[in-house]
Amino acid sequence: MDESVLAVPGMEGFFFRRRDAPSFYNVKEVTNPALQFFINETFNSTKASALILNTVDDLEAPFLSQIRPKHFQNVYTIGPLHTLLNNLRVATNGHDRIDFSSSNHNGLWEQDRSCLAWLDSQAVKSVVYVSFGSVAVLTESQQVEFWYGLVNSGYPFLWVKRSGREYSGVGDENIPEELREGVEKRGYIVGWAPQEEVLAHRAVGGFLTHSGWNSTLESLVAGVPMICWPHQVDQQMNSRVVGEMWKIGVDMKDRCDRSTVETMVRDVMCGDRREEIMRSMAEIGDVAKKAVSPVGSSYVNFEALVKDLKSS
Image 1 (cartoon, rainbow, N blue to C red):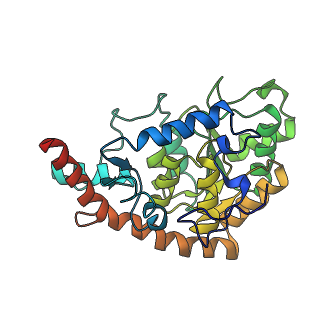
Image 2 (spheres, helix red, strand yellow):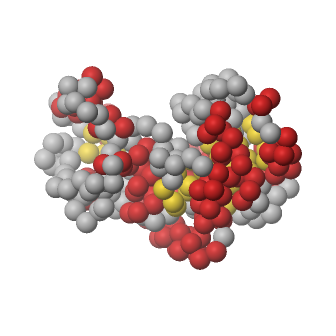
């Protein structure tokens, strides 16, 4: 799985391994239904008159060069979309801030905002935020290993734990007593959190994530380094980009043991590794923020998209 993947246009100079490929590529037969579905959808997408992408020109220029103008004459890169929308609201409403407490959010479940008060009680950049998104399912063993790693790291953590959906296995009642005590001492668990606001909170210093693209961009803009544990589809590649291309986090794919979790949490929360990551984060984050400013590429592209839609 660590064999290099070569001759991918636009990815020259980027060390890309087989294990970093989207999950539907790692199959034994080209006739695999999942692989065939994505191949067909990729070909079908070229029939569209335009392509809208939640990304930034300057962050993915080598990849974008393989899309336009070869396959699409019109490619609208308008990311990070969540920050662009906030900036557009400010420009439209004349406000100098966005009201995060609005009930108009895109979450699938009701947000538990009590975690914000808990974060207020924590030291600056001391908390690890843990969320594996809305789809990933952890086994009981994986859950316990993550818990041990987080508790043993010594850092407080906020964990988004989707009740009845995120975890398979026996459940919390079989957790060892010493681990339960550690979780109660250092952890705070909610069913769903206002993620943008959590990542922007002064207390959050790291993000243990499934590497979904939206979460990756939200963490990048907030300046929070990532511990990536990808689950499926594009998350495998996203985690590699975060850890090796942008160098704004660490890639923990295909590993789930307490020792590795503890080590990687400490890597992103303190010491020389964190300093290196934060230097890269400042550079990459600045590129993303400039893109959604009124003169930035994503802002201008969004205005062009709206204009083109109105004229069509």
